[in-house]
Length: 441
Image 1 (spheres, rainbow, N blue to C red):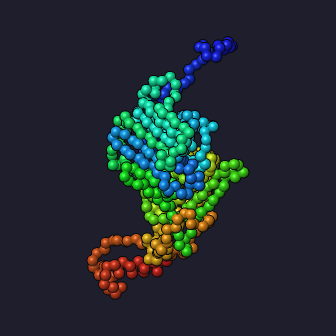
Image 2: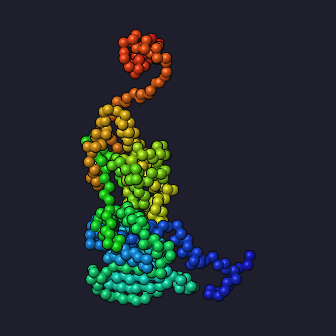
Image 3: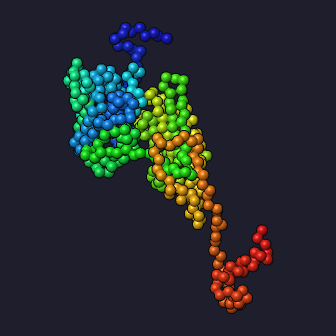
């Protein structure tokens, strides 16, 4: 076999070009993510910045991420710590996460593609300004011009260091103009903004509850407070498990399962990784429905299940790269899914019995649910299974109707014999007589 003896830097006749084109790379990067999902993914960077400033993450008050949408531009402005110049130079604008990238504990920005994917999804002209306590930079580039360059590098437009900026001067602004045609149309739609609001409320509910202010124009997004119904006779499941506990960065899972307000749209499983909601109200097999349990039906519209995965090392968590579903093949998730299936069963059994009370006069389960109060998840006591200490109503026999026709004179004769005056009484008495005489085996 001929050896390759070409000197470094010279044309190598043995080399084969396997590099990616920028057009192809950007097409693949942006193709499989919805515009709403891309914008929510972009907000992840603000959330991680907020967590770097407030490492315990429990109080994010005073920090914000504001979105301004129009037919001409998209702007995200935050005050969540900014991007350090060295981080920008070496890591932040690379496609994918470098092994040496400084980590953020309890991060939601795991894969190193969210910011780039979002800005390329939105438009062609990109302007970024970011300031930390000691550094400040701006970047301006047009995607079409960048694609013509032989290298993948960007350049700072301005660069300052050794500063001493005030808190009011710190933060990041990303402005995108020359929007793609479809994007410009969508950003103006009220339905698009409604969908964006709903997904931000779901995806970043924990950060919103911790005080992070997220606005879309003049509208402030609010985060839901997950809760389950409890009373003296109804107790929710709450289990906590630690995986990889002998390692530097264990993963802690918390599973809650119980009942809440009847709502088919809100029923199902919620999967949250490091405070970022990955699945909401899921009613599919990926969360265990139909696998040793019934498929979802509206009689289960009170079911709620919550699974929290938390780790300082976000790479251990079972999310996909778009953070729109779970990595179902990850051993950690497969083990947790079995726990979810086991957690569901007694709740669904309870809801089946609750449903059957529609046919009974006594309704002890229904009355217990109506008396129950919503209890925030963080206040729920640990319990290995969903429990209800209420005796269901006795089952009643189902009734059916019998109809047949006989000559009038015969029916009148039977009426006199039975000493009754109505046709209903004739039917009941003759049926009872037959059972008595022939037996009811």
